Image (cartoon, rainbow, N blue to C red; front, side):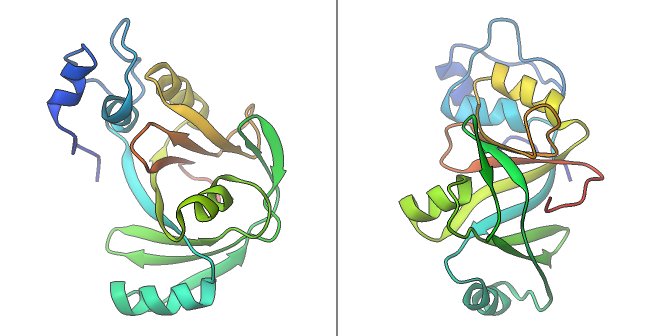
Amino acid sequence: MTTESVFHPQAWMQAGVIPARHGAMDPPPAGARFTGVGAVEAVLAGLTFHHFAVVVADLELARELYTVSLGIDSWHTRALSGAAVHRGRPVALDGARVAIGRLGAGLVELIAPGRQPWAAREILDRRGEGIFAIGYLVDDVAAQLRVSVSAGARVEQVRPDARHPVEAYLDAGSGLLVDLVQSGSSWPA
């Protein structure tokens, strides 16, 4: 499934641009610099939905809750490890754990972020448990990052590093992060 706009055209007009439809890897219209909903629209244009991510304090309790509330009866659980770059500084993901379950054509990712300072940990500390990112598959994370940044999105975190990203969290001003996942990569990394 590819994304069609769930945002109103008024967001583009508020930014002073009425966009022509363009592909996800096309650069935004000349001179375009979007904010808020316009940036989200520019980032998501044409991407393929992959998952939504929920940050949780207790992974086992969350699995029980989402098994009942969403009807997911099978979870694949694993520990995260390795490096990431969060807002320009290296961080380790050691201690974080994830559980992944299938929901229709997409996936649900529950993340217990551990103690290290990274995107999920900050969101859990600031807002509490809940959905914090919507994940999309992309053919080239680095190229999509360039397009997204030129459209006004801010890079929150990349894994494993900025030179060879296979996953990236973007803040496009909507309140949810956009999680770009390299198509064909081992996810979660």
